[in-house]
Length: 188
Image (cartoon, rainbow, N blue to C red):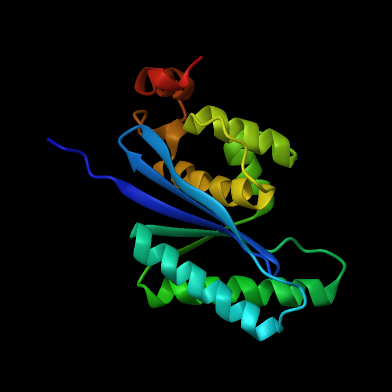
């Protein structure tokens, strides 16, 4: 019996650089499909940039036909104007996903880092290196925005599959033992 492949689109929103990452999940195998960055000029009209973000997310959805959409939640900083701009970019990306009929899943930066590296305070290089290990690719992304978006997709996969509790009935007993038994290719 052929296992179905699930495609997950991850987005790291931004008004000047929006990262995107697409993974394919089949059984216990997770593969990199595509990652990159939509770069926009800070001199461009802000509403035109929002339109470009919507167009790019729509194009990614049409090209990759994802089953799931995951996005990074805005990081709460001190600059209110930056938060407003980031929220608009996130909203436009979410609207494109919803328009395509995809459910939206949002994760905090800390949750994403913790899911991928085991450390919610990991830096961007640590996240990228762990993604290279998990997804078996060697080329470094052109920007951390791309690897951050890929991390969003991987985080969603881990949250959805609840990797540590699979096979144990969610009781919390022998979680690592079952994980190792069910994922021999991920143990080094």
